Length: 90
Image: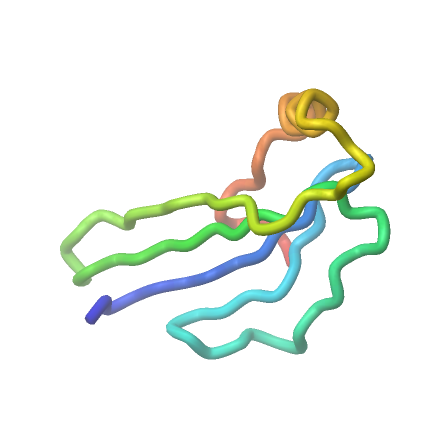
């Protein structure tokens, strides 16, 4: 079992990123956040640290895409607005 883990949602909107619901060691932090109406993609950043002495392992996965935007348009927006850093305010 991991000694530390987090699961953070991020939503890409036309003007950048918006933080979504966050979990820390399977406990929700704050209220569940409704995704923005203008979201283009939803991504999840998962972090697992097996022990206090090991490195964090971070993965990103896209969990939702808007049918109104092509892959080319979404890729251009991700290039314009890189994924948020781990300390992104939420």
